[in-house]
Each structure stands twice: as C-alpha cells, then as structure tokens.
Length: 637
Image (cartoon, rainbow, N blue to C red; front, side, top):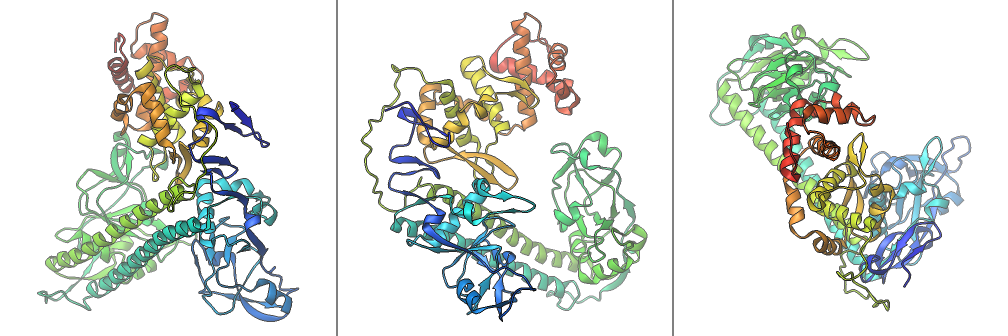
C-alpha cells in the first residue's frame, strides 16, 4: 500500500496506518462508511428553478406562488402568498406537489423546506430550486445535508458571487452527496425529524407561554383582574412622585470588556434586557466606572434614545446586588417604597409606552429625557399587591426561561446528531460494510517514528475532544495556546512557535498539514455555532486518543485541565512570558519583569502587546512566577 495518494483536485489523501478509520473511505463529501455510495446532487435529484417574475411579460391565469422568503428551515410560510399570471406551460412546469424539496437559490443560500400541500394549488418563483428525487433519495435527508452544509460553510464552495451571492443550478448539481442504503436513509431522516418535532413543539409551547404572560400582564397591570385578597383602591401617581431622576454618563463601546465592574448601556435595554435584569453582561474598568453613574438595586433604567417613538424609553429594573454603572443615554429613576420588578413590567406596558411615545422628540433618532418621563401618569396599587403581581409574572418568566434553555439544549443535541448521523459516525441500522482486504498496520513502539505533522494532528484532536463542544467549538487561537503549554510540560520545549501578534503561534498547524490530517482522518470536523467557529470531535476521535495516550500518557490532558477556565488573554500572557523567559535563559540573562518586557518590546509583532491592559507589570510578574512553577527555571519577578 502506498504511503500517500494525490487526488485530481490536489487534496492529499493519507493511507496506511494513519489513513482511515476501519470500515470507512474517503470521498469528495468527506469520510463515510464503505457501504455508502458516492454521488452528486444532480445525479440524485431533478432540479428546476421556478417562474421568472416579469410584470411586462407574464400572461395567463393568476396563481399563488412562493417567494424565497416563504421558504424557511423545515417550514413554508403561506400567510402572504402573492399571485402571478401563468400560461398553460407554466402551470405544468412550476406546480408544486407533495414531497417537493424547495431550496433557496439566493438570500440564505441552501435554506430548505419540504412542500406538504399546505394549500391545494401553488407554484414557485425563480429564486427557488425545486428538487425531485430520481432514485428515491429521501428528501428530508437531503434537507438535513443542506442544513449541515450551511452550518459548516461547505456550500459556499459552490456559490457564485456577483452583485448578489447565489447558488446556480450548474454548480448545485455538482455538489458531492453521500448515499446511504435506503433503510439507513429512512432511519436517519426519522431520527432527525423526531428531533425537529421536539424543537417545533417546544417552540410552540414557548410562544403559547409568552402569549399567556402578555394576557396576564394586561389583566393584572390594569386592575381588570385582581389577585385574591387585594381590594384597596389604586392611587394615581406621576413618575416624579416615586423618586428622583438622574442621568447616566460615559461608557463608550471600546471601553466595554469581558471583565471588571458591571455596567448597562442604553442599547442593551433594547437587545438584552426586558422588564428587569439581575446580572449585567458588560464590564468596565475601575477607571471608566469613576466617570459613569453608579446605580443601585431597585433603580429603573430608561433608554433615552431610540429609533422609533413606539419603543422610546424601553425600561428595565436593576435587581442585582453587585455594584453597577449606567452609561450615557440612560435615564435613571430611583423609586422609594415600591416593588421595582412590578414597575419594570409596568413601564413597558402599552398604557405607559403610549405616553412615552407622545413625549419622544426627533425623527431619525427619537429622544426622551427625565423631565418628560417625570410627567407620565400611572395608577399604582399598594406595594403588597405590587409584590404579589411581580411574583406571578416572575414565576411565568422562570418557566419560560427553563423552556428556552431546554430548547437551546435540544437544538445543540440535534446539531450533534446531524454531525454524527450524516457522516456515518453513528449507524442506526445493521452495518453492511465489506471487510477491507488491505492489511491495517498499527503503529507500535518498534516502528519508524511518526511525523511531526501527524503528532500535531493527534494533539489538536485531543485538545478538541477535551476543550471543544458543539456549542463552543475549539478555535485555532485557543488550541494553539493549549498545545504550546502541553509541549512545554511534556517535552520541556515547544518547537515551531513564532513570535506572532496573538502570542506564540505555529502557522504550520494550519498550513503544514496537522489540521487537515485530523479532519481527513475523521478525528475532528469543522463546526460553526453562532458566532463561534472551530473544531469538534468526530467519529474517529477514539483512534487519536489511542495515539495520544501512547505518546503522552493519560496524565498530560489532566495537567491541562488547570487552564480550562482561563481567558484567551490569560493564556496568551502565560505563553508569551514563558517564551520570552526561555529566550532570556538561553542567552544567560535574568528573568524579571523589565527583561521580559524588553524581549516583547524588541520584537515588531509583539511590541503592541505592551499597550494592552492584559500585559500590565502585575500580570507579567504573576506569569513569570507561574511559568517558573509550571516548567522550572530561576526568576527574579
């Protein structure tokens, strides 16, 4: 068996002991089971673009049709069907029938849904591909592949980018497609559709619970319904009767970070918080806090500017206990003797929102100030009734949040299922895999040493297994820090790492083969989850784990656990300081804060680090002590 074979598209395929999981093969679609056929979308489906919309040329009988926006993932929106004149030929060519797979040609390219005759007669426009199976390929399975391809970015390889990106028919037909046996296709489709049904039912339940809460708020916040035991009259008040107003200050976007003191910015009142907030997500330094407005538990925070009068003055009550600060364009009301959670809900109720809209000033940007807010009139129950109403509403919120978390978890589980099932890592039916006639040669201690590239492929794979997940794939920036520390721990040196801006960085892991080897061997796969992208463990990760334990032992990964919750900046400081300290020791110089800073300052790609707060003298000093304890060496920090 040859050591390597180069394919016609210049992709290196590794064979031999490091080549392929037993029972699998390499295809243009990736590593799949040996009994899965290789095909293309064009070989499995007849593909037809829809009706061209041209008011000057279209003639015939008006018929309802689907536009691109009507096709959402797994569902078709028929609420606002338009019509277009159709000739008799059009009626034959573009009529939809049950089971048609509809795929967006532009917009979110690849977004797909199956037509299920939601209306008796319907057609579709040119921005949609209609797919009909030629050999019985399961439409739901094909839709699942499209979902995975859009998530991993695979489909972008076939997109044409002119003024607007789109997926032309001639390229779509060439997309490689794996063909599992028919019974396995059905089993995969059924498993994924079960997950989709659960996601759909949870989504509907959450929508229902939110509607119930809105109706409950309408009743309780207006006294149309009173809770048992309360009969006191509600008292008319103006907001300035409740307490004093103040104005937020400062906090620019570039001053917000992931650590420091809690703060709330006005834009977050529209995007992050609604009615109340316990734990602000943004942080600022102590220096920035000194120029901002301190807020306390129970304060009401109003957005002082916005895009529309209807949303101006969006409010959230701060109910947290940690010190926090309000940025500019926030108006703060500090009520006395009231239930702030109740008031947070009331301030966003239509009866108050309509008053805020009247007071809003401006066109392109709408503003509202404390003087305007002070004039808003409300009917206020006694604080005991306020607290009882707040408890009812917060209990509903708790239930909705629990359902939201369950929905998010279910979506991540389904995403993992797709990765495992659509690549054949998990088989749902009895495998009919022919035994390979090629002898599988396992690496032993007496064989020729493995290459650096394969070694790093295994290291990256194990780091991915232990520190990556479907929700948070392990990115290159973070795994590089981990691999540097691992090599320093296990081998006392880390070769190939360069002084790059993001810290000690080894470009050879990306361009020299290790990532590619790990992916093509089925150890890891590329994954995108929201704003996070990187790698997740794939079906053959156990093979990589065997190699890793043989070369590094089982304790090495446990040693790395101490860095799991370190921020990227902390890992960068640690690795950078260690690399600088090694340079100093090699040249016989003392290792202290000033000498480490000099090494950093003297390198053109490193010197900018010293302008960052992460590389303060204190942090460098602590890092010098830490690397001395981790790897040994005399220090004078």
